[in-house]
Image (cartoon, rainbow, N blue to C red):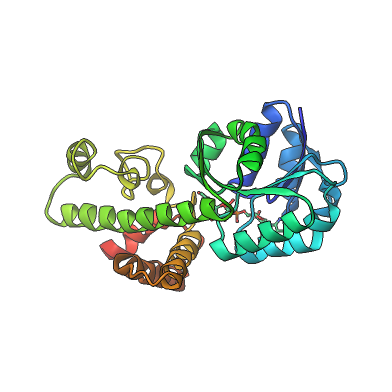
Amino acid sequence: MARIAFIGLGNMGLPMAKNLVAAGHHVTGFDLVTSAVEALAAAGGNAAGSANETLPDAEVVITMLPEGRHVRDVYGSSIITGAPAGALLIDCSTIDVDSARAVEANAREAGFEMVDAPVSGGTGGAEAGTLTFMVGGDDSAFARAKPYLDAMGKNIVHTGGPGNGQAAKICNNMILGISMVAVCESFSMAEKLGLDAQKLFNVTSTSSSQCWAMTSYLPVPGPVPASPANRDYQAGFTAAMMAKDMNLAQDAAKSTGHDAQLGAHALEMYEKFCEDGNGPLDFSGIYRMIHGN
Ligand code: NAD
């Protein structure tokens, strides 16, 4: 079993780190939020007082941080200089492709193997150990990373060279952001037409409009008991994170000369929802804005 440094124990990172502990690994974790570090220790991991403290004997270093700037910071200030020679570096955060490729190039120059391995499946998937990992990196780094990713997920897809995990993630989340808006618009219209949400769900969940935003994350309470709509849109996956990912998708579209118009429009809607003070809510809470309540 490996000694693993885990940096970033938020909504996703903490349950992922706990699954590594449950698989028998020695996990030393750090987060800026002390209660998250304490929660890992209570689950059998080790608490560190800084990112640097997680590193001295790490064989694997995993990061699960909010944005590209956090990943560049932690790699620049701690990991590249503090990780032992030969450690495998795995970044599971969702960040822009350019940052992912730049960080990997720095790591490679310093002699490390690294993969970008963003995830899909939400906090439920993180807790259940059923995440999908989209992994960018060369064959040897992927082969080394796979056993650790297997302990946190059930679908590990090698999507190509460095940065291609992030490319797959951004394409996936642009579909999710758009499809959530579509589900909100239809279920809102249904209510205004006097059509019961459960009855519509019975049709759509088994018909051609079926999608994850509907069957796992329905933005109205009732038919999908585990969806955030049943707990006042407590995140989950925050609207601020969705706006971030839709922005990353637009940046990627522009950098390749691609015109993703529905993505651009959905991004405007999430940004408006966040500007109105709803950034910390689950992204499915955009139903309230669309429905007008
Ligand atoms: P989060 O905000 O809950 O967790 C991020 C954690 O990183 C926080 O606890 C924060 O304190 C910590 N952090 C920030 N800077 C740090 C530093 N310098 N050192 C140590 N810790 C630091 O976010 P999350 O929901 O866990 O998401 C993490 C990443 O996973 C994001 O990139 C997000 O887009 C992606 N993601 C999230 C979900 C989801 O459903 N929440 C799903 C898929 C992917």
